[in-house]
Length: 166
Image (cartoon, rainbow, N blue to C red; front, side, top):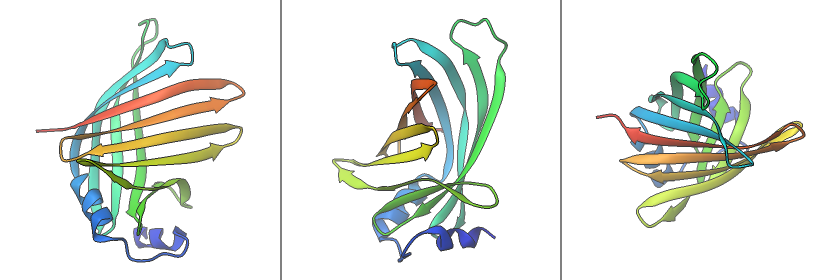
């Protein structure tokens, strides 16, 4: 079932202990705040919710988020949202899959130690759009993911900040 995640990782090797520890530090509940900002700098949407990382096996965790989306001008009713991914530790970083069958790669990135945290950059082509992403982990307290989205009809940035639920 989920153990097949490894079959999707090209040239799979056992992840370095540091990458498994990074993944393990994500386990638990997180408060999330997400903003979608147009290329003009105007906030379009605000989302608030809870995210959960749950271990499946040593180097694989399931990510689930749910919450409420509101337009910044308040003209539309609130909408509930949810998403699921699988996070897998790799020798030098993390791989994220959409949690669906068949599995589809979302992003793969190398993590680099930066002071007290880790960083990684990735790109995802979702034709005709491109998602360029930056992951910043300042664990155990929080982490942030920024996606710059560009395409024929898209030009916005998604900024998500996570804080550990106490």
